[in-house]
Image 1 (cartoon, rainbow, N blue to C red):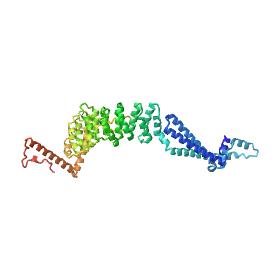
Image 2: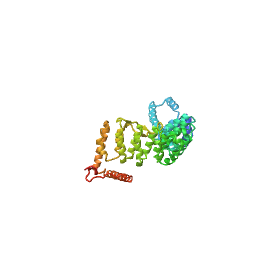
Image 3: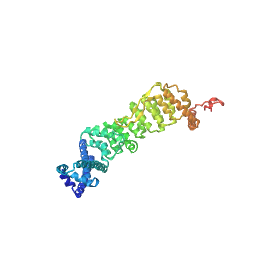
Image 4: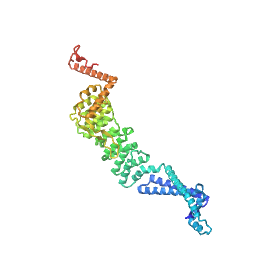
Length: 474
């Protein structure tokens, strides 16, 4: 062992050559190992073994580095002592009749201090080499922990491993899409196994991989049995170019066979395919889930021109549809949403009716998208009314505050009344009130023209009749 050490580190020239060779070999081997794991390795166990080899090689390079530089960093005496057979030297000293018996303690103390310094520098150099190699490989270890191991599993020939790899991609909420992940997901979308394709579609939607949208849209018709989860994934990618690409699915037979998923997809993409959504909602045999999805999707557009259609949802026979329509009308933030909401409040016979929680049906592990929250229906209506700022709510809230027996609903009604009174005192409702009166007058005039056209004479109002002016007195 000592002979090998002297052969490698016995002279300055040898130490320099050993340092260059060790460092060059480590970084070359490091590049080969990490590149293989990144691009070709398909076994998680093999990747762990190779990483262990990389660590051992880095530690060995640190050892070679400190030995090569020990004469500069620790001292020539330490290097000489390291390269010398200590046992043979100790035997020689002990056999010397003229020895000083205190030499053993002195040698021990000096050697102990140098060995401590050597150990510290050895660990420092090993860490420096490993960190440098990791940095030069674009932070391999961080990528390997997540999502590198998942990508390795995706290369496996075993379907279960491939699915596990896809599941690993969504284990962390802070994961962002990278070119490597995009390539892996796009490749998995062509997998022959349905389970792998479905999970790959889910990952594409969860990570909002826009590059996957064209392939997902093709899959709806190519593999109709996967149309439901694939359309949900398309919707998860989000509005933008995907919205235009998904327009072709409006007339797709496979897509139309799954109206629930189609409606949710159009809603998440904020697609303006209103005709198709109304068709889903008004279909004679439309399922409750389909009507909920259609009303929710229409509400995502936040278009006041859809107010009448959304208000129709308040009259639906299913409670979930009614609750979805309430939330959709609240999204409009429109004064004209108040009358149908007030009518729905008074029409509710079950004052304890609870809106069930409804979520967009994404796959397990996906982000939660709320359609309706679990809360009292009358409470939900009052929350929606709070977005309208309708002047008629001021007397209406006082008149109908006892319809609900729920304490929280009554408190909310009181707060809304106080808010509207304060706005009215500041004159913020004057424009709304003027617009409503103007519209009412126009509608009355139009009705009068129609009555006159059919020969009916409108009743005359006598001068001084109190009914001639219904405006509240100030």
